[in-house]
Amino acid sequence: MSCSSAGWATRSSPTLGTATELEHAGQGHIVHRHAERGGRMPNSVYYVLRERLEELTPKLIPFVRSIDRAMRLLRTGKAGDLGSLFSSEWPGADPKVLAEVTAELVENGTWATVRVDRDACDRWTGILHDAGLTTAPVAYESLVDTRAMDAVA
Image (cartoon, rainbow, N blue to C red; front, side):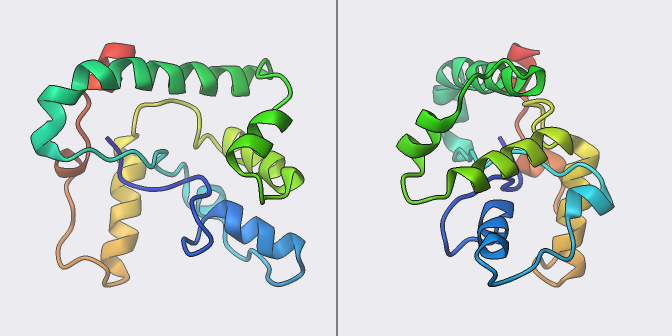
């Protein structure tokens, strides 16, 4: 369903959350924000084995719908206090960092929609290819299945 991570995953995964944490701790500085300088980034960390898509699509539709609702609540400022969610899901993380990262992802458009933007995905996979991380350009269609997104739209 997606082609890139935009949130915070683990300490071993370089994400905006990890980078912001390191910056707050005085152990680093963010010098390049892809979404700010290069445009909106792809927005999800959810992957499904292609051979299971038929079976899982009925379950993916309500899942994607709930993510869409959460994004809408965040964008409109109606999400309420996120403190309990942050402490429940990321108990070791600094809630100020999580709030800052959430605000940035909303503001830069990364969390504007559940739809994986074709141009953003192509730009991101192009960056990966130009850096030598893939042997050939990766087609949007080989990464993204739009059935659940289409059902929610």
